[in-house]
Length: 115
Length: 112
View 1 (cartoon, chains in turn brown, cyan):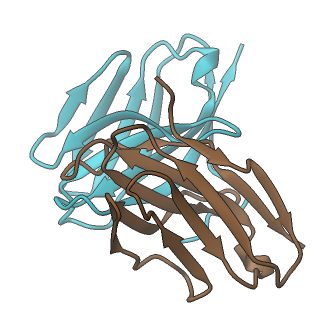
View 2: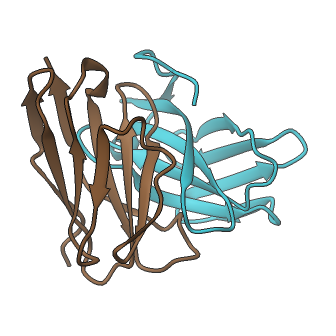
């Protein structure tokens, strides 16, 4: 079946613009995760949803970052007033069950470049 | 985590040889340790995991070793193939379902 998809794959934003990144998880997956991956580094956790509930947002770097999953499937990561340090690849992952967070299936990511 | 910057540690291996990728982890309370493979332009792909009460686990062509005494994890790839070229990340997770903590990566390159 289809894996995790993300759109857009590439996004260029001018500093100060707002952006919205979309994640379509694998159908039926309960858990959804967002990560930020800077160039040459490992992914860093941003936030976690179980169905529509955002259970952990401890990794969001500032209040300019906001994520939602209103119907428990598609999720959107929104970044307001983008800054250059927001440039990174944003990865989405989904997992079938709770209790086994390591069985995560990752999407290809959205590469955000802030100029 | 700490910044590795643009210069990932690189392991160069002759095609057909075995590869050993090492990782040091920080949290002795982690329950699971995982290895991911990331190819250029793609998201990380799960390879193998090991629970903290084990010291060795084998998969297809891969073996993970866990040494809790020195907080060390290794991934062994047998008979390395060109398709194994990628960046490899170790990661750790707790018993809850909320997050995975990725370590620094190692770039594996294969010499023909």
